Image (cartoon, rainbow, N blue to C red; front, side):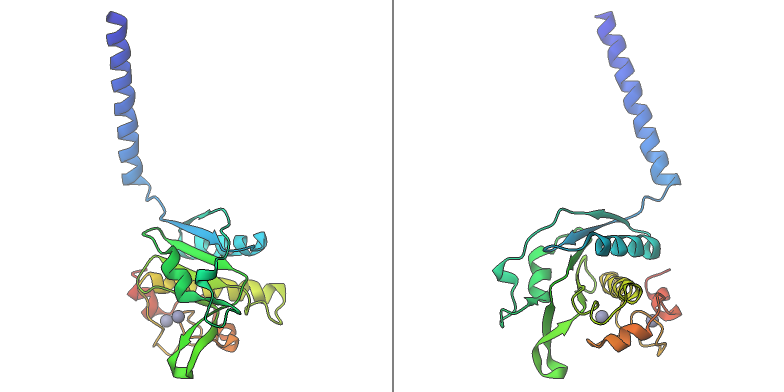
Length: 204
Ligand SMILES: [Zn+2]
Ligand SMILES: [Zn+2]
């Protein structure tokens, strides 16, 4: 009985210690928010690592890479030649921060261009938790360095939408929240940079 009691007290003491440690952690160390990177189909490990490093550095998220998932016919676009970004988002949307990465071409409707299947680099809910990025158009005629910079900017842009940012209206072409409107030239003009107006809008 005595031994049991001692054991019981020891256990209580240990639980108390761990509760204090947890509280101290919450007070003194601001735990970074987590974003999951979800490879859709076969994605180069080096591309996943570019995304991980950029997102961790720029937004200070902690990135966790999920095991690859495979394409299914329900997310194909109507032409069946590529995938529909809105269908991908609605299929995988949850309350977790999720960045879906694929090397297949993605598209969505663009009424301004009178197109039902406009090829895009990425799409993200605004505000929301889910975005999808395709490396397909970013790799075209690009050196490794140029591709790296494009992929970084597009990922940071879509997460910017998730955080509630609209397209940039400051007129600063360097801001990565400019509307690329599907043209790579616009992306190449941007820098890995948010203008003052966009930074203020997300409170950084
Ligand atoms: Zn801006
Ligand atoms: Zn956008």
